[in-house]
Image (cartoon, rainbow, N blue to C red; front, side, top):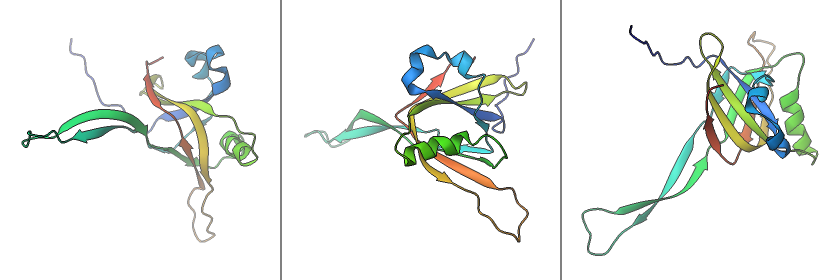
Length: 160
């Protein structure tokens, strides 16, 4: 019997937020049951290792390169505005009002049977930018809002 391994589709994912101050009391499996929102677009799942170049005297045919720090891009999430549940707006607005709390988050990519296939966890997230929909009476497109999240690290978690 042949096992067929197809690439995962990028259209089926959601976000879960975890209170960072209570990480020890929170299990990822229970967090997977609380979906904050589904999104139409997610970008910024990116990690880069900086490299220090050292030009050693007497070695003219190459430059030595040493890995230094890792850095992580901001994550941007976009989705259609809905009637209820403004959790993302509230999270951002709490920071605007000076009472915000950092949160870890899980971005969960689902397979065709809607089971978690890949899970990326960002650490100590801060919702640094919220963008509301562009409104235009001459158009009939969907109202889209976006949230940009700065964070301190990205981890690939095991599937649930």
